[in-house]
Length: 479
Image (cartoon, helix red, strand yellow):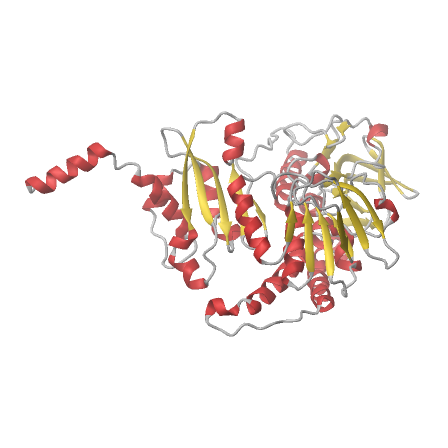
């Protein structure tokens, strides 16, 4: 039996940050990972998908080179080579998350065997019992697979299998789900020359975003060749004698089409917390189907057990799990001065073309919360740098509190929006006023000028009719 100060279950972003942070502060730490170090982000999510997206964008730029005064190139991308590059990028980043790297930090790593709670201070890993003063649950989430008749009988992909097992010779792909994962992969494969049909149950893509945001993305994806079927439900799936996937839609779908056929099927219908088989009941840790329940200090119903990241539901972002892990490290090390996890604002980005980035509330949420707000919106087509770059599609919009210029939320749609909108994220978090951003000098020509220009839209509202009449009178009277 090994005895540790802390046992961490799961070596994704949250678990890695917690283990490294606690070991760096002198705690004895055991880190248990049932599969791959680095978790979903490194192996199936952020890293390989962004590598895929970059290759797809290059292909799209060659094909649309006339935008930049260059002859277009009718590429025939090698999907196998693109997927191999994504895997090689993943492999190049894996060493920093490896068992060897964390052993070097003083963490005892148990890899390849799942861990299971047997009490609030004890974990069973294979035939080894580990005792700990604290246990941190960071087991993450996995792809949710809807109970569609026939789905279990056919080969299908989720993001967890897509990058390693997709047949690179496919000519067509059906995607079930119009959330971030479905949109990113659907658009990328279309840009790489695959015929893609995306089936979305709801009325718009990216259901959490405003309709104008989803509409802008939908038009861009259509231009890239993605066929999008909204308000469409899947009744059954099967495989024909030639090995092609057959998807039967309900009669009331948007296109009235009933049968889709493709070489491969990607299920991107959401995520579910990895709570099964980790001993929550045995340890008395409360949970719901959405995930482990935690308080504002990220402690579970058992005081010695903490949880971070996707396993507790809510926002499922690497940076969110990272922030939570830092709070847990502090609270374990300094229990008499606990920190609450109350982030002022959570930014996120969907890495489509154009990117969709958001922080704070949008119009949809503001109306649901009965918030009184004013909206200011600036199109990127009126900004010099996007026009010069040949990517003027998109806009930035800001919601401000009624009768003030305190920012409630910001949404940016455009090339690289996930990078250049962080000035507004800081403004939301720090309660910086739009007037301050308008007054700040921005380098010209840059994408970040979009932040100032939307703030200028607010400042123009200060020029009331009375003030304008007063100024005109001043010039007329000559003083």
